[in-house]
Image (cartoon, rainbow, N blue to C red; front, top):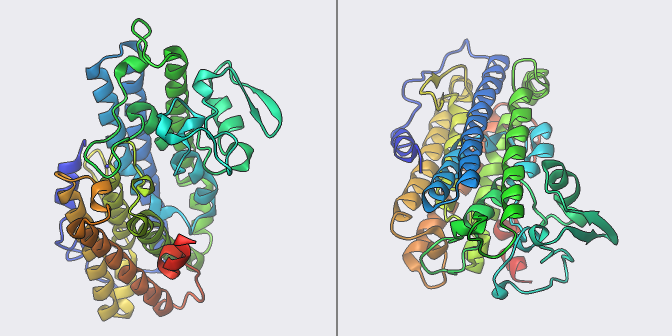
Length: 423
């Protein structure tokens, strides 16, 4: 969480994509890693295309605010999320991606840093002095005892002074979720139906609501322009001569380790743990990733599709071209056909579980599914968690089968020590 949703759901049906990919002894680790980098470049290029389409829609909205142009900007944001989420499997195993990722996808965020919030949000936080700094309403703010000039809202201000201001991760000033908040506003529905409902007049200079419409527009534009810049950087990094591609291709064994670290860590600690099980334990709508737009189900689905793609070596670009090449699937099958079958089935099962969540989201949003007392919704989300955890265990078996040594996957307290979540 939409543009391409139907096509993507059709592509990601439970029918395995692996059937047309027979294992071949000729497949070698170096070729697998090279193709993995090529798909990475294609995925980030698609994420960039999505961001550029969003940039155009945002510019059109700012130029002529209306219900129609706001709806178009929101739709462009939803479409832009799909290809980006499919790149997330490149995290964890690739340092260059991990060092960069916070610029574009940090969450959760204390939205009071950026703009006005409902009184129910509160006025202060023991952990964050900038909890309600409201940059849009204030031409200067104090960060760590120093006055910062915020009179001109620019990409440089957002990335240089505001992102994680004061060393606090919840001070998210850039990326998809800052833009999401500016387009939808807070979701004040709790575990009831409905997403954020920011009025277009928050940007209308002639009929401005909630004041500072010019500065709000400047912030939205700066954040969107910065997203495009950041995605250009990562697209270039995965080009054949880019730093990320050169790094992962430098050593085939380390390259395989990077692929499987990304698959296992995203499956277990990040997606099953931090993004799904934590919200299920707390029954808290604030723990859903795309909380302003109620697009969380779609983000989970595309993460799962991206994990499977890293194994199959198959990716369908936004332009409709299907990329295929040497894959982990072939490499594992050549060594242990039963293990490859197990991995393939687990990947299909996790995608199928996310499809089931996405199907339910047509009538009941993800934050409603995780609500206390919603037995069917809770069970559906738990089934997704279980599929991802099982998948991660098989990833660990693949790591062992390929003699990659000790590989540390991301953990999560919500899975490893659930009681600690409540302390």
